[in-house]
Amino acid sequence: MEYTTLGSTGTKVSRLCLGCMSFGSSDWRDWVLGEAESRPIIERAIELGINFFDTANMYSLGESERVLGNVLAEYDRDWPVVATKVYNAMDDDNPNARGLSRKAIEQELSNSLDRLGMDTVDLYQIHRWDYDTPIEETLRALDDAVRRGQVRHLGASSMWAYQFADALHTSERLGLDRFATMQNHYNLAYREEEREMLPLCDREGVGVITWSPLARGFLARPHESFLETTRGEFMDNHERMSERVATYYANGGDEINERAEELAAENGVTMAQIALSWLLHQDEVDAPIIGTTSVEHLESAVEALEVDLSDGDLEYLEEPYSPVPVNGHE
Image (cartoon, rainbow, N blue to C red; front, side, top):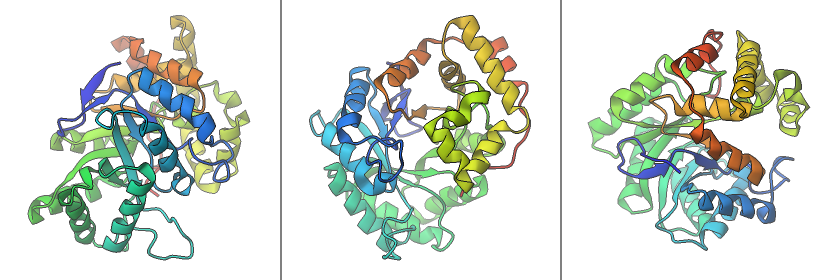
């Protein structure tokens, strides 16, 4: 396994981060695995050298955190780097169990730590921008969590670059702990982050953790068969997700998919490995977040670290892309 420094934190993380959205309860999403099925995948990830794990309070409404915490409890706590998130609604009957107010952050962080079985989480991320709470309120609450020793580093996810720049500036102005990472929507079929967010992160020394590196599976198989998968069917029938699927297909997406399939055949690897290798060749990216429901796919993802794409290959994959509507900030 290869390791890199996460932004300017000094913390060393594996070049691949195991996303834990697929672990929890099928009551939340049909394709989610329970603890008994999730455990072998997490354990194999550790065997392969992965030390970076990303979850969120909203994943299976807390069950993802609980499953991850139960497995990691059997290992040295100094080994893993654990990230979780806050923002989305956790209880429809409680208006304060959502958002980024001080009350929401303090109670949801406490709940997350309980489920993870940890006193401190390595990276605590805001899942989205909260338009109802002043950013000063959010940043003060997060800074207090760092000072209490409940959080080591702060991160953000999917927002407009001007919002992230404002948050960074506000932290500096008020003398507060600043966001050290950005978890954003970025892959071979969706590259709008290259316009503003990635240059901003590079300038500010912010680590980049990319979600949906395979475009929700669009880059893992020929585009003609994408919607035939369980997750593909779910996305096609879910309004917000179907818009994301349409984004992947739009403006060169089909040809990008076909070129990934072509290079995979030429190199004797999978399409998913080509897509992951492309991301790993992007200087701004610290660690793509890989989600999986099988040990086989996990092992295949790790093998992508060995796939060497030439400059010509990278240009060939990128050439069909053209601008698409910004997606993933909602």
